[in-house]
Length: 538
Image (cartoon, rainbow, N blue to C red; front, top):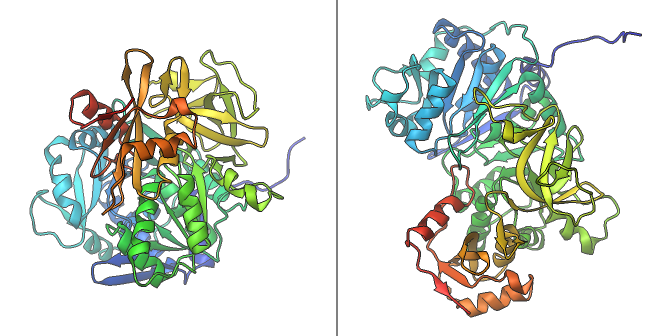
């Protein structure tokens, strides 16, 4: 028996049409050095049509890759709409990659055009001679530097075209967007998202059982638009009528506190290191108003328990932890306590990595691939599958990352009967001491609860007796001092005593990856090279 329901492809085009029609007057705000600019969804959509016409005139066709090298701003949003809707593939380039990685990605993706913000021209110029596939470079904003050779002006290209671009009918499974992993081990790998997967991911973001984005929201989009498509929020905004505040390069604690106070977002998305800096800046600011915020979504790395407590107790804000990765689009799990959870237990749930969202499946396996129990105790590697989870990498055969139709995440931890994950480590970061695992994630989260500790990162270092032991790298709050003995005592009261590190180092700052995570690979390298001053205790 066949269904008699109507059928239509799930295309980003129709997300944009819906937002333009139903939420025409909703706004996108862009923070600049001189203030804030704004444009309506209708205006942005019509400019996107003209951008698509300009790209077509430059020879871009279906399947061609058009890259962006941009901050979060209105022009980037216009590219987000135009490129996939015309049938081309949006490739978001990470502005914080090393030049050799950036050049590799541009060539591997075979980008035809790059759109770059004028403030980022010097960064892109470093690889100008290493991207032969690129036929045109479009600069957003005035640029007379000549660093990139002959370029085209973004606004001039749009002004030359007429609105009314006829978005084509496409296969919903065709490529829409591509994003590369941050490449902490080996070369970055490309993940290609389809129109269908993007549609379904956008719908999942509006569920109250996930992050519940809706028309009542105005979102401060701190997470970069090159980081897994701004966690999907750019498209969810048009789907659900969510206004956006784009912070561009103003990503430090002080300007973010000012944006929240003056532009009144209801939600905001960003990595934990940003929110730690926001807490610091808010404590030092004379005028802070976070009353508009109903919630914050933090992800990309484990959220320390103290941070969840601090936003709740100081400002009455729910900090929601989300888990995902480039390969999962990224929404896969969210740490919302189950209905009926007693108030005194809510924090225990919020401190977990998250509860799997509807649409994806999660399981735990051991080193042999055997599926493990969901008992909240057994430790294994998380594997995941679903309609917005990648099944392969672009142009790279990596069978070790896939197991019987499931993506191997590389995250180690436990899964309980309620579907909640607790992540103890990444497979490459796990500390195996005397045959037992130590969670660097839990040590970091606990250590950052100390009132004099601003940041803490824990890495495995070789040990002649135990094979590996933890090294704790600490950044203190400005103007404070604390000894190693006090920090060890603090940890010993909160974690297993054999977990407590014997080796410590104090740093001015902890190096970050291109997406704002602690760069543990670099910390291990600095230890190996003798570049760290290490205090050894008994």
